[in-house]
Image (cartoon, rainbow, N blue to C red; front, side, top):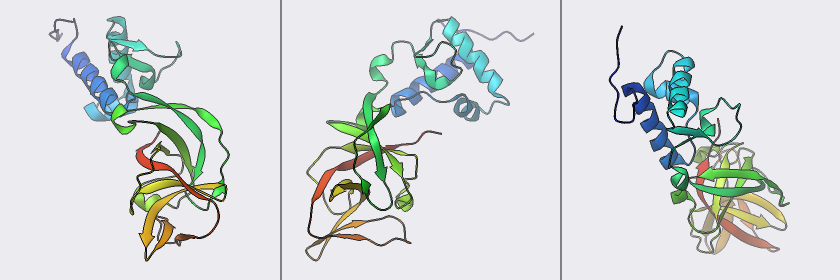
Length: 210
């Protein structure tokens, strides 16, 4: 029988490694990794190995559940004493069109937690619908983190309100004109002409849920 050495907290080498990975992931992303992400990182043969380590870490007080007592997801776990560094909670105010503009109705769809470094200042989140920004790595179902700002320059990805409809596009100034440019070679830029036009913010970050 192989007996693993334990550190000062009573953790085995493997438990300590899993805890460190979860702590680092939480600091960098604002959420904890899924069991499968942990499994892939350590190249474990099964998710069951991860579950065993997580149960041991909970029992030893190194992890705690943050919601749902029956949850089996690592995203429901929080390293001890790390609540203040997990990230910033943002409201998700509806969906944003990454396609043609759509009616700008504000509807709160819950909240997400993001790393504080990606959400400095006054920010909100929107869920993406459509595929006009796929060449910029923004896909349907993603959440864009939007920083309210009037300091926009050509090339920034923005959330814009056009005659009561919202869209996410690349902002471009050219020959004295303003364009909202899709990052999809099959789509054409939108020239901003007369009528209501407002930049609601700049896309500062992206969060994707698997």
